Amino acid sequence: MGIFIALLILSLLIFFHELGHFVVARAVGVKVEAFSIGFGKKIISKKLGDTVWAVSIIPLGGYVKMKGQDDTNPLAKSQDRDSYNSKKPWQRIIILLAGPFANFLVAFLLYFSASQMGTYLSPLFDYSHYLNPIIGEFSKESPAKNAGLKEGDRVLEINGIEVKRWDNLKDIIESQEGVLNFKIQRGNRVLEFKIEPTIKKLKNKFGEVIERRVVGIAPQIPKDNLEFSPIEGIKFAYHETVYASTLIFQSIQKLLTGAVPTKELGGVITIVDITAKASQSGILILLFLTALISVNLGVLNLLPIPALDGGHIMFNLYELITRKPPNEDIMYKLTIMGWIILLSLMALGIYNDLNKILG
Image (cartoon, rainbow, N blue to C red; front, side):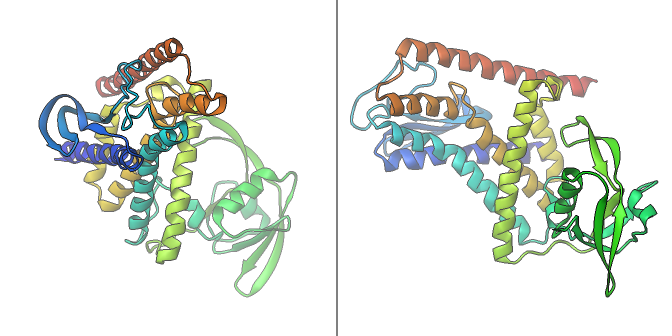
């Protein structure tokens, strides 16, 4: 049942991605010949208007086939009035952006829905952004505890910089040098303490070992779920969508630079497995994970790889700037190279997945 839900979620996210392309393509007058969820042989298909709507046998992707645009053959073009190629470069760019935008919008709506249900703390979102700077516990040999701080103290300022949330506190400690001057609220009193941070080797969210300045404190974790008003929910959804996007861009950068080994790259099997497990862990976990996968789809499709939306955007930007289309032979070769890169990444992801399953 979990695997079925995982495949359904992936199919829905792909559907919304392709629907974004479809809606904008039709809005600018491009004929859409086919709209398919999945690849390969069609299981179900029905023609409505000019478009054949289909569900295909391999449910790990999807596509919108616009007149005059074919990723498998970039030289197959049409200059008819209702074709993709007859449109101006800026119109083609907004068609291409519409798919990733739909994924970001879906993620935003999922995060907003989660916020209105009473959100509990989870590593699937940036919860330190929502915690008050109140000390909940100390580490062993904590410089802060040795300096006289106590559980329940609220950090007001560090070196004269106001601390509003727990993530502010972490950023200030890491950015300041030397001994830190803490201004603390304890009951009705405001106290000041001088604390000298220690340097510790810790793992960051990407698994890298880094050195950080720490004072040995952890936040007070609220017992109740985080509650958001509708306005606060909108801010929460926006922040989490941006945060997730940034995290994925950073992950890609670290994979490319070798900071994170390629064996950490997961494939579709990992995505299905994690989503299936999340479906059994409650609706909130499932909402957060689905939002994260949706952002992932949006970001990955914006990468400047020919055969992806980002690659097509790159070609159209070239035409927009130079006022002449890119060389067809070069574009064809780059598209083939793009497919090789994509298929290689997919193969590596599946290899890593199987390697983890088989130990």
